[in-house]
Image 1 (tube, rainbow, N blue to C red):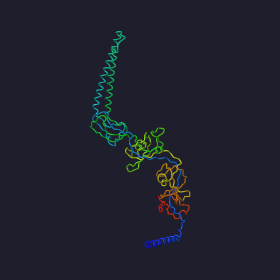
Image 2: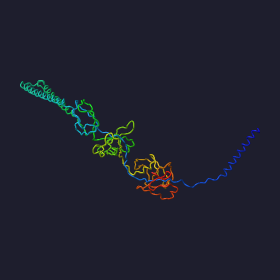
Image 3: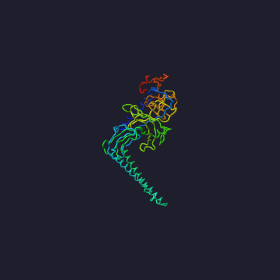
Image 4: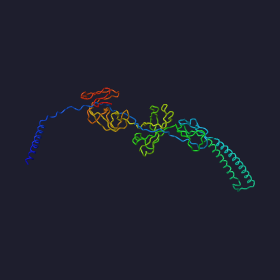
Length: 422
């Protein structure tokens, strides 16, 4: 027992002394000095929002393809005796030009035989007519009134007439086959590929190559349902002469240069794509190798182009500089007294490099913050310098606002500590 007390008593004494010392320190500690200084204001650039009218422009991408493209196939068979020099990959073939010709000798002989058949049938018909006249004269001489058609030779005459008609049909068929021995282009077009040459034997329906029309090219542009609504186009739309489709501008890089072609929307798909859930809108360019070309650059099939489709006109919308839009739906604004930050959720109608058009009603002249801000929060103190449309910077009217703030270059440079910069 004495041993336990000898150990416990010193520990208790030490603990009591520690508690007394802690209480003494708490009672004698100096009071914390309170600072009345406000946090430094962040230097930023701003620009006024405006009211503007604008045309909604929908962007999409797609591949150019010919509206009409066919396999060149003969309707008759034989040996190729002629191939046009234009019938090469990339060659131009105008409407009606002979692409290739099959040796016509056999078909010319068929025409001669058919003409002979016609002459023979004509002779038979003439003889039958004469015999029918004699038969009718004999009936009249005999005073017969009730005779059969066979006695009047009517069936024989009809048979001879049918034989002549058949002979004429055979002659027409022979002439048609002879005409089809010359294979012609049904439209103004270009050759995509050639698979036949001089001396080759071909059968009816065999492919000789592929050509596509240069009269019209089209681009299938996949759009969402919301974009279709912005264009004001329904499913299964087709333009009419009275109401032409929306204008489209196609752009692509050709030969190292940015090119553009003008066209229009002519129709839309009648159903949604089952995989992408998008709707195809078809834009066309007429005469892409001629009047519709961009200088010396035609809008050739196979090009991948970006399309800008002009939609409905929006009047009196709120415009804000593009840099003021954060994410998809936040706008950084200056508060009413122009010294703090106000973060506002907005509905963006359309945005491009020039700015963002929003549906929200903001007073014209409201300052939108264009400088990047880290860890932004409502009410954050700001030192705002307004950027005017001509590029000059308007200094703050209240110099007190700049106390302790970072220095900003008047030409729109940066600010220390992550302040005004663009």
